[in-house]
Length: 617
Image (cartoon, rainbow, N blue to C red; front, top):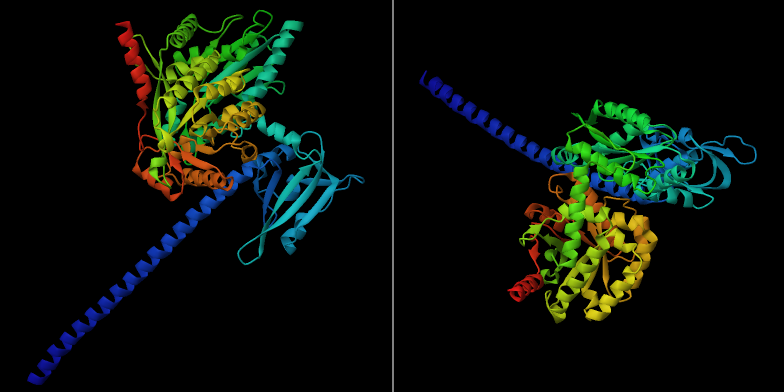
């Protein structure tokens, strides 16, 4: 009995040990499995992130190409179609993607008029490049059919297996008409740009003068658009703009012209339309837009628009209808969301608005005549090399009668509207060159570069190029330490003039920077023809890159192609250490923003003001 008792207790002990070992082994195996799963998830996440980067990089390149380009999946369904291909075929991306290629690109023989079989089939099945000459017509969805030549390239994976095809369509004029159309179109909304819209407005004015014809111009402005961007992000804001543009296009008559005038402003030219009819149309369109919510992912975002209407008739042929409509819309916005203001012939806007603008014009003119402007500088910090090679962007501020700083947003919009920017730019150039000569940015080898902003109005002003050349010669400054900044939108508006100005000033040794890149046409094609040295990535892409993978991919894409083109990149809105660290990881060359340094006044201007006060005393 004692033996059995001992055996029984020993067996229990062994059983407990065995169970403990099994549990320990199970926990060990589970731990290994969890570790393996974590690694696989990390690999998958990294792969997905890399894939997203490559997709956005490819998408960015596709948009910038001026030839018509379409990519196909292995089954022949369209996976991407760029803006040039949309214009050529008459199919928008939202309708074409997922459709069979043969339904979107329909080809017929020039001589017989007979349809030809899908030429991409051989490429997709055999992986061979196909080239078709210009003996075919493309049957457009809308408009006149056009002769085209086609090049079809196979798309292969890492195993050299064909997984799709890329098609490039060439017109007989080598895409000149498409390129012209693209530069006149806003890339985001595909509406016409301001410069093209102004041509139609001029035609309406000419008809009013010569024939007594009546038309009307409407400005729509999305209410609280900045709040939408802040709450939902820039990608949501862009999508809201596209949805609003699409909604407006569906409401207008075929004889009317619709354009994107600004960030959240749309212009509508109602041709052969009296003011009372224009008011009815505007109210009907506004009601539809204001009652149709936009969708962003799984969210419904209600929007509304304000509208300003101004007539184009024999009574106001000397006015600027676009400026009048914008001012009228401003009055509507001051009355609340969803409001409409109807202007009358010869009336730009409410008297209070005119008085306010007139007051600002007087203040700007007074500041120019009495040296009431001052300059600040903000550091542009190198990220990938010695930080001592920094440079500064020059920023303008106005001084009120008490010597307090007036923010630039308060006066620059009026200066642009009333063509006062060239005078302001001249003041900035001359003052900055004086400051450089006085040693504001250091001397000798340790001298820092300074970047001076030039407006679009100055680029196209007669005599401005000669002014710059004269100032550079007269001040005897170090030209390679002077960089002129011009915005992308300003360049696109006067591309030929900008190219000529850049070439002439660069002969002196100065550098050029393309500012706000990514907000306008973003065409790497025109970028290749501009002799710029720096590419400033717009801050709207940069500010959220630490948390938004899409913005991060877009910044990486712009940086990558900029480096391929031999340009140095500058990221704006570098607000904190997290953003700056991501910029370093992406190998951006320079960063600018509050995370680097806040703007500070130029010592040269402070001393100048102190000397002026002492002289008065």
